[in-house]
Image (cartoon, rainbow, N blue to C red; front, top):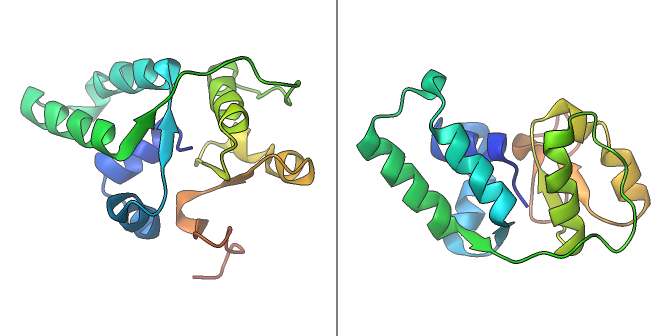
Length: 143
């Protein structure tokens, strides 16, 4: 499960720190799930003036997002999750849980602050794109 900012790193900014994740998505060795709420946020963010995306580039990026993601219908989480400091990011925690995601990939500090809790509960790892590997998160400082 990849949050909106990590998708921006992958598709808009082409951040080289997310190269492992990008390669895995392109190869189909990992699946990135999204639901209606994630897609709605993605479309809203693509229209932010700060991104300055012309219509052609926006359409190309959006097509790539839909090609690399797998849309699912979701139900309510089976049990309570920790509350994210940013209520807009709660949907990422819920989607990761209800889809049995192995990872929630994000650079968002409010989500990363919950990483120990979600790992301790055995739900999923919350990890930055630069530290993601298919075998589990790298330790910060290791590359």
